[in-house]
Length: 361
Image (cartoon, rainbow, N blue to C red; front, side):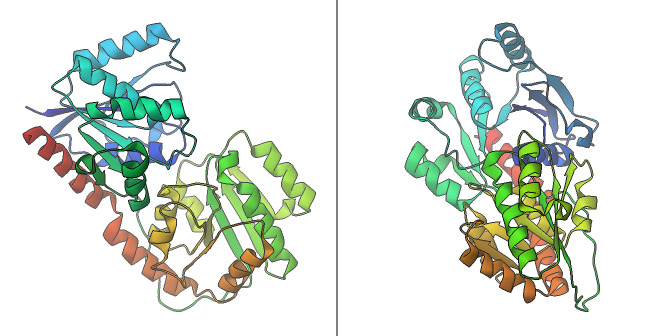
């Protein structure tokens, strides 16, 4: 008999946690597992990326705790399914999974934690701590998150498991001759929200252009900040050097258009976009936050990290980095590392072992 797994996630819109859920669905062995995903909100931008045809999907309209009818529908459906494992992503879904433990005491609960959750209020942190005993395993995506959860959330170290995100992208090999360029396409793939600090990346482009570096910023993604960001580029006089692509379904094609990847967020954990960029051999400009430094310190000639994208002294590091960049050497180093550490195949082997070990307990 197959092991039943219920995944719970708030949405399947563009985002690191959502894309990781898609990666899991596309590599989970449906010969071993019976899989059903419960999407709490009817926001499923990425649903077409689910290639595994043996996945059952149920979508709800739970936008707040006041959606009683939809909540009841969700609980009835998942209790009827009787999963052996409930694997949830992100805060609200994680709390729902813990509540389900009361109704499904034999189910094993996995809370998958993405992000450093700096937004947590005292009330939400208290609720998290108070219900954490209902969880059988916590999966975190960086060592920094692992350490934080012990210190701040007071999770049991024995329940924590570090499993970095994975990439499901076919890589392209190139020859080893260096390519000298007199222009650079810098790319970003992100939700257009304030916390991603895309304004900082736009300011960086202005800084580089003013110093004779021919660059263009290409931004994949959509969000509430789009008009604000477009106006900011206009006010800086560089709107012709900043392109907004909107949502892109085939992200590999976007990465192929760029030379360097940039992530300028105020806070991150272990961003999936950085791993994708590495898998495609793109040198990286990044904020020095979360798990990023621990990852990129291994590639000092192929990455540069800064603390403030509005600080010209910090941006001089980016200027020096670009002037001395060997694109092809970086492509080979980054791809080899990513392929050996972040492939979706390797990830699902580790995740399958977690599931099977939990069932045996």
